[in-house]
Structures are given as structure tokens and as C-alpha cells.
Image (cartoon, rainbow, N blue to C red; front, side, top):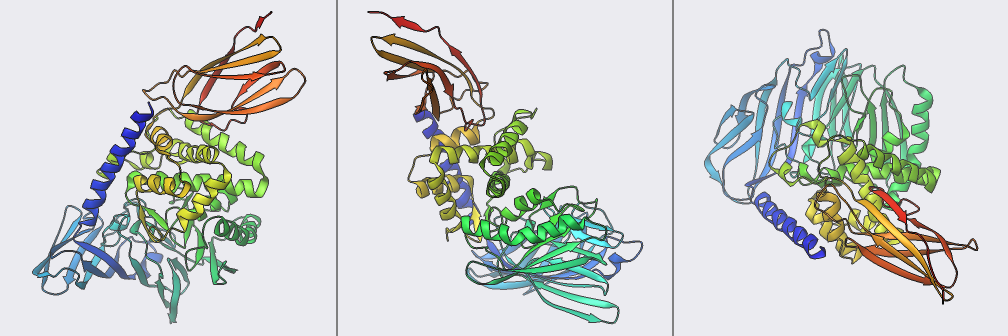
Length: 548
């Protein structure tokens, strides 16, 4: 059985290697997006969705390049012109084909300028209502409001210049370089210091938006601005609480992981058109209207490490974003309210998974070729809850010292900081960080659909003055997997004392025996419920007393 799991792990590694090779052989790398938008009319009645835009795309040719293929929704956009060095273009089937009439040499850096018009349509990425305008890109919405290479593996710098009415506050990624007011117009210029994936690009803006700002000093002594955009009428007590707790939250995650990795932190509440609780846009998190909730904020803020600093390589790896952010909520709860509150939170996550009618593996390699519908991709009971429970069990398997040391090594790993990682790369790295073979653990919990169903039994026998405890582990599972796990056993004795034993259960009908010089009266399997994802039934065989 152990050999079988190793075979699966090696198979996944080989698939990942083939994928990584094909990704690295793409013909170009986007270095920077410089986007200019005229949004002035979008804040005026009748609040149209149409606007004119211009984007300059700087890219590097990784091989000799004759064509650049960009994502650009045919429904949302009309491409008006593409200018560069001797180019022509076609826009069809949601793709902008830019043809270079003279091939671009390998390693050359070039720029394209694309002028386009966004149609007056509702496309699920660019939202306008009653003087509020915002975007939401995950997973593939960026292509609906500007031409781009809309894949999480391609991270680029981003600069935004926007024209709005003078009474509009507009936030975006990075730092505000300039905001120039001329008569009834204001021109915003936002610019990132660090690269980001297109799904993390954002605009949050509104007429008469409210803005508060605080400052936090990072572990390295850098002053980090934190912006809070909010709507009039929201719960001021809740907002003030989040503002007061934010420095502590930034300190906690920075000390546990690595120093806060970006130039700004920010939050913006939106309106009812935003159908999610939050979205972790890099340096400017989106929240639902009036959603100044501490747990939600902790989740989205943790994404600045798990998703933004180290970004999923493909959407098949989405659990690395959402599982870690959900687990980070639990860690924040543990920090604030203690271990008991953390355990209660994790048990809720396990119950969310148990209650799910449609179960599937956390890691779905076929999503690399075809992204599923958004409700499947962002499936709460599996991609969030089950994945977080798996991380809890990984902490149990490793122990706190090894687990948290590995998290720190992971977020400080220069190979992946400001870059991307696949599930297979993560598993390999985590084994390196811990020095332990964890292939068996990740294979069963990431590839498995369900969970172990234990039907264990034990017996207590006496021989002379010795008492013998026999434990037998069996699983009757809904799938052809035997889940291997270390098991904490608590044995209670007649005199009121107890002893803890740890066994590693790796096969069906596995027997463990312990001998004591006092009488055991009760056996508890996993008394702290560290193996969150399980059903367990324990049968006590009738005591057998052997008289001499």
C-alpha cells in the first residue's frame, strides 16, 4: 500500500514536469501593463458600462516571435488599433492575434499599444451602478475589460491612469503616484512595485467614497500605508474595530510567515453587485458591502502571502490559495482566542465538508486544461474547508515546530516569492523543508474524494500481573484508498491515571499491542480529534482474564 502511494506521487511529479516544461516554452513573457482609461461618464446617469481605453504592453520574446496571442473578450471589447513595429491584428473568438510582419528576435523586449472600446454590456467583471464602479477578475475576468495574457502564471508590473469626475475616490493596486484635479476632473495614477497576476488587478471607486488611512511599520522598519475605502451608512463600530486590529494582524502574519511583502495594504467595501464575501486583490482587498468582519479580513489578508506573494501556477492549484487562507483564519482565531476556539473553528470546517453532497478531490489535474464553473472552482466545502482541514492534519502529523518552520521557509523561499508554484512543486518543497517523506500524506488527502471510515476494536487481557491491550485498525471506505495516519491513543487505567501512545496505522487489520502492570479500563482513539476528516466506530471486545 505504501508503494502504491509512492507510485501515485511519482506519477503526479511526472505530469507536473511535463506541464512546467510546456509553460516555460511559451513564446513571450509580459513584463508590464500600462493601462489608461477614460471612466468619466461611468459615474454619471445612466451609468453606462462603456468606456475608451488604451494599454501599452511591454513584453519579452522568449523565442523568435511571429505572433502574440492575447485574451480579449469579443463580447465586451472592440479593438480599435494595435500599433508597434510593423504589426497587423485580428480580434476573434475572444482572442487578439497580433501578427509581427518581421519576426522578433529571441530575448528582445518590445511594446505594443492597443486602443480599444469597452461596450455598454454587463460582463461579470466590470461593474457599474449608481456612481460606484469596480472590477472583479477571478478567475478570468481581466480579459473582459482590458486586453491581456490572462493566465495566473504570467505576472507583470501594472500601472493605471484613470480619468474620473472630481468627486470620485478611486483605489487600485500598488501606490498612488499622483492624483491631479483639474476643474471637474481628477486624474489618478496608480503603480505597482511588485508584479502580479491579472486576476489580482482591481479598480474600486465611487462618488463620495469614504477613505481612512493608517500606517504600520514592517519588521524591516518600512512604513506601510493601509487604506480603508467604505460606504456611508456602514457600521462604524465594526470598521473601527478592523482599523484597530489591523496592525496586530499585520504583525502576527509577518512574524509567522515573512515580512509583509507588498508596498501597501488596503480594503474596499463594494455593493450588492459583488456576490462574494471578499476578493484578495493584491494590496487592495474587495469586501462585500458593510462586511467589516474580522475572520473575513483575516482570510483575505492571508492571501497576500498565500496567492499573491506565491501565486498558483494554474487553476488546478487553487487549493494552495483558498485552503491556506481558510486555515489562516483558524490560526488568527487561535492567536486571538486560544487553542480551543481554533479547534472549534477547524471542526466546523470538517463538518462543512461532511455535509457537502457533491464530493471531489481537492487537487484536480484536469483543471489545468479546462477550468470548471466558478462554483466548482471555488467550492467552499472542498477547496476551502476540506483543504484547510488537511493543513490542520499536516500540522498534527509534523508537530507545531516542524510545521510552522516549514511555513516560514515556504513564504521566504526566493524560488517562489513573487512567482508561481504548482501543487507538485509545493509537495516536493514541503518535504524538503521538513526533511520528511510526506508523499503518502498528500497523495491520499489531495487525490482522495472522501475520508477514512474506521471500524476499530480493542481487547484487554490479563496474564499474571500484566495486562495486555490489543488494538486492531480497520477501514471500510467509499473508495479504493487506505488512509495512512499516525494515531493518538489514550489509555485510562483503573487507578485514574492514563498514558498516551502514538501508533502509525498504514494497513488494514493492523494490530498494535501494549503491556502494562496495572489494569486499563478504557481506550480512546484520537481523543483530541486531530484526524478531523474521518468516521470512527470502536468496539470493545469482552475482557479476557487469564488465571494461572
